[in-house]
Image 1 (cartoon, rainbow over the protein chains, first blue to last red):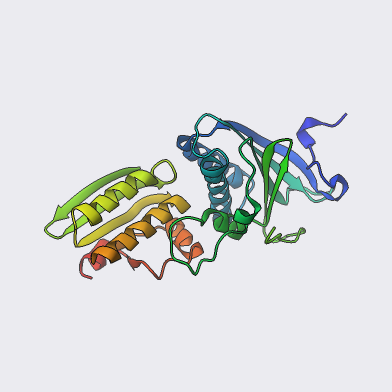
Image 2: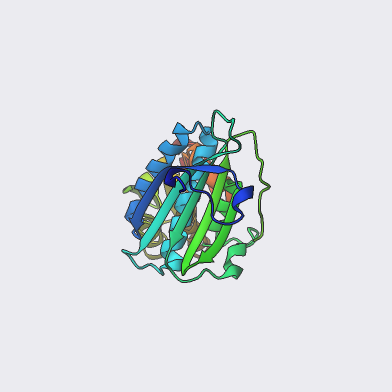
Length: 171
Length: 110
């Protein structure tokens, strides 16, 4: 039986690094919860010894991803479920320290329009459309998928300097 | 987030404290647009010295304020950006379109 504390990402299991559950947050869509999530992620990234700029990148990405869920997947409706799962990634069995942090966001909102996942050109000066750009600039892996009626966003930040997975762009 | 105002004839300084995220950017946007569109304040200074965090919704509100100020012929001036706020400005590549100063003294003498 699989140890629930060492769950693997479900697809392509053999090729994925070992993942150990760090924390799981169950929240409701509510902008007032954002500051609590940011504080939690800030502390989690410090515990994992991320550099300050990388901690800020992690916090910013989760905040922007949750904002997108509130605004787009749930169209501003409050009280709807969101789950944030953080796992420490280990590249091999002999590791003495994790090499990255995987963050998975799940919501039950409407399917995300793939066209919108491309982001927008920054040449155009206008409000809006920056959140996804911030996430892609801040994280090493950004993957969107939809399974069983849920939107899934998987983000990974590697502890410098090792980056075994290639950065995925323009999905 | 808290917003307080110091004003004199033709200008206002909005002192912002805390985090500007989705929960609070609508309040900042509203105050900013009232100053620019309704009160027709010639110079609107945003003191960001005590802003620890700003997200894309906060940046969007600033862009909206900037556009409104350009339309009305007024000026929107930012100062006191923390490293975190400056980082987000750089990520959005918008730091060059805003009028940004290091501190209040420089901003007021601009």
